[in-house]
Image (cartoon, rainbow, N blue to C red; front, side, top):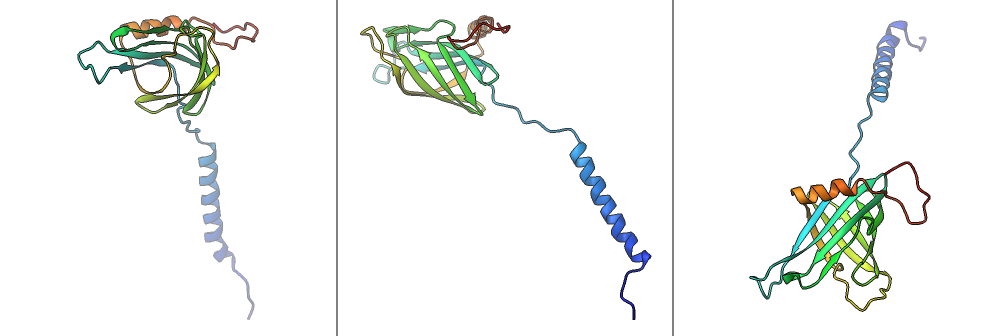
Length: 183
């Protein structure tokens, strides 16, 4: 008896190999599905109320951020409850970089002159803010009011969107960078 395969036995195997290779080639050459990269661009805010004085006017903490590539630029605003202390950052008072849905930001505190480092995490509906420390001590005796932990929601009010549009016109670069073509 001779052991071997007949040509008829090879056709089903070749047909299966052809189908598998064709299917693999079709899958490999199809359009690549890209996942959306997180984008920190937006106006983000949280109310800051005094639980001991619930009828008092609430303050707020606001971030306006623009992301270009991995770089994030922006400005901030904070007001304590009863508006007793204000912190108003200029465009460029927030600068940082992102990796995925997390960013590290340096905040220039206009009130005290200190520079704080914050880590923010972007989720579908909120921006989680956490100041991790002070990079540079301030030269003025006033206390910082931008620290702590916040859960900020997207602010789509006309005022917030107007500020965001104006912010997009400003350059977004590190202080030691040479000017480039971007705004």
